[in-house]
Image (cartoon, rainbow, N blue to C red; front, side):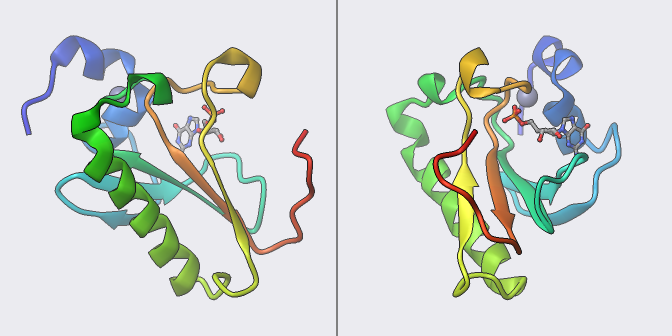
Length: 121
Ligand code: 5GP
Ligand code: ZN
């Protein structure tokens, strides 16, 4: 995959994709990767990301529709493999500052293994 160097150099998740910084990777294919969150908020907290650098959900183009669906398929597989699919889990994608987005490369949080509260904080 062709990657733009300036983007990679400034994005922590692009660096994880390039194996330039370590992560506990739980899934990887040609288009996506999943790894454990550095600061887990639940017994299972995995981030599923596209290898394509997309800064926020607002930047998801029509051509990315299949890719974004793929992220959800991976999230489901991770929940199933960890035995929490039937119990329940939460998928979250934050967008922009008020949501708490801190890394500007879209990522699907897979949170589970404990009772989730609603509304979220
Ligand atoms: P956001 O706040 O953008 O929705 O989520 C970013 C997430 O990335 C946070 O939960 C944070 O703990 C996680 N994170 C930030 N830097 C790293 C890192 O270098 N490695 C890993 N594994 N997770 C990270
Ligand atoms: Zn990136």
